[in-house]
Amino acid sequence: MRGLKRRILTRARARGLRLATAESCTGGMVAAALTDLPGSSEMFSGGFVTYSNALKRDLLNVDEALIATHGAVSEPVAQAMAEGARAGTGADIAVAITGIAGPGGSEYKPEGRVCFGLASAGITHTETVDFGALGRARLRRAARDHALGLILHALA
Image (cartoon, rainbow, N blue to C red; front, top):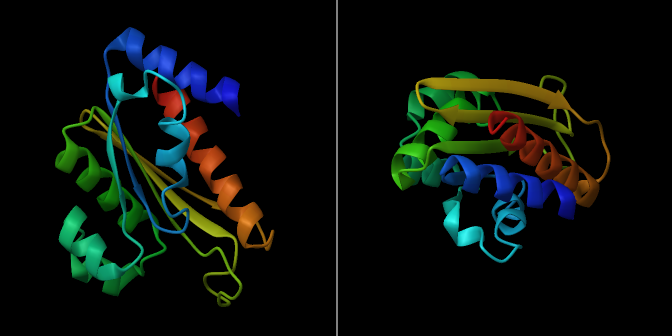
């Protein structure tokens, strides 16, 4: 993963871009990964850990109706989280993660489902990945790594 982090840092620096995060199930793991390398302050604006719906609403301006309609683990909420993180930090690119790390889940939203949002200038990409019931720790690492990959792709 160190190589992935270094490529993100190098590309963001080269393009003069700043990054931000909005995380739920990963609890700040993406922000921690992005700030692991010396020089990361040149490209990392900040991050939000919004585990509760109230903080998604209060810190990221996610509309309560969006959560009520789609649920916190949904692409519309991931999109709103990414857009809120970007707006709240002034970053050029923001990634958001919301998912079900387990144990548990439901028939409609199983354990291992994670929704991602990536917001940049005028464009927001969302996707859902069903990682399966990997166990909480493995799922969180997989979601972190996927989010880092999304950032790297956006910096290409």
